[in-house]
Amino acid sequence: MKYALMALKKYAVFSGRSRRSEYWYFILFSTIISFILTFVDLIISQGTQMNFVVFQALFGLFVVIPGLAVLVRRLHDIGKSGWWMLILLIPIVGYILLLVWLATNSQPGVNQYGPNPKESNQTSTQANTLPIENNFTRPTSPIVSAPVNDITPPTTPTSNLS
Image (cartoon, rainbow, N blue to C red; front, side, top):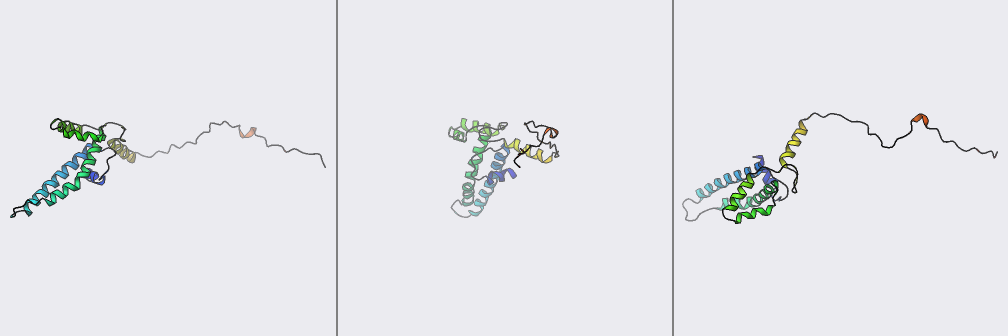
């Protein structure tokens, strides 16, 4: 559930990367809500000659931008440009290829679209659970100075003008 809400929090963010779970949970919950709203629309339009699809249409308008944004971020996660979503214009092959890409695991490490969200989440949780050690050492200066005993105070010139 938190991944579906994460996609909605990044409503129109087309930069960065999204994990597989963020994309697929968003698709799952938006599909479930869409089916529920379709049944509500059917119940409301009972007894009328018109199909009442206001709630489902409003929800569709609400999720189109975050749906495109999470799709672009998911493509970024596997190292592809967001423009690859236009492959859907190829009838059957485009859908199959995009489905395979969306199910592909993330590129490890940092790519041109940012750090891997899966690795950054693991690193932050590991950093929060590891004990903190105090390994503070005094930094050493690259300039070598003479020991304190070898320093002589400067002498002041004396004058015999008295």
